[in-house]
Length: 211
Length: 174
Image 1 (cartoon, rainbow over the protein chains, first blue to last red):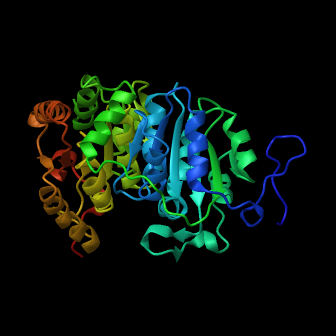
Image 2 (cartoon, one colour; image 1 turned 90 degrees about the vertical axis):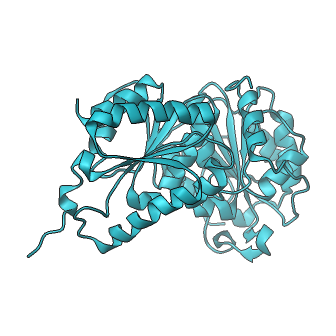
Image 3 (cartoon, rainbow over the protein chains, first blue to last red; image 1 turned 180 degrees about the horizontal axis):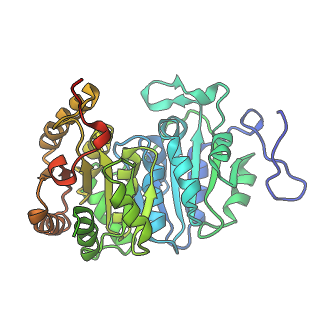
């Protein structure tokens, strides 16, 4: 580890990717969902991010992408701007965010206080055959977000640190980016394959439609 | 009223508030008009597919939205249209300033322009080419209402016949 950035908590220095614990996306997703008490919106990227989200139990405020790789964070930005009182969380993989790095700059400029991005980083395009992503090399998502202008961008040191980060809540203080180094276990759930059903449920869950 | 004022007025009348865009010379009066009016919530995106996604999120959360881009930007949004907007039945309002035709100097732009309507047709997205100020308000207003009522996207292609095009893009014989 070369240097570190103080994360605002006494005596604690945030960890760079090489020194953080390797965690389970399924476990962390369940911990996240257990913390959601205020009907927060969760937008989950294509593949394993949304497989593990629905495995943690469907919620009316969940949006599952069936395609459009890379667009979870920009979709979440739109939700956050439309409903500034509601906490909004984007769940995205390392390969997906690498496809849409420009959105980090857009989000940092728009400064939605109610948006949290969680990156599941296992350094591979897991679902296509575990080919390496750039984060398996020198590329650091947390540093990229800081460079884009995120005041809060940090690595999850371990499971306890993840819980502590979630304690901050989701409605204010953002935009934040948390990146967790995860293993290569596949997600267990499967969202419905009906896009209009997913949209209608989500809109009802956000109070945007009574249909 | 100038074409740009008619367009902004019609968005407002239909409660379209969030406008995500990637800039273009011809779109300048729209982008400036949105920035100058507190009614609108402008989102300057880095790519057009990002803009489409942000507009989609806003719509699903109850805020009507539109996306503005140039012809070449449209070429970047195929995935966002085919795997998000169309299957999820998002009434995306796409405003596209048309380059690559009627005196374009840049061969690259002419090829981009040619892919646009076939792509929209292949996806079954209704599109209107706006050429005339006298019919602008009617087409915009009725089609925006149709989009939100039928849960379907619509594309408005702003022809140089309407906007005058981009003077800097005009082909010159020397």
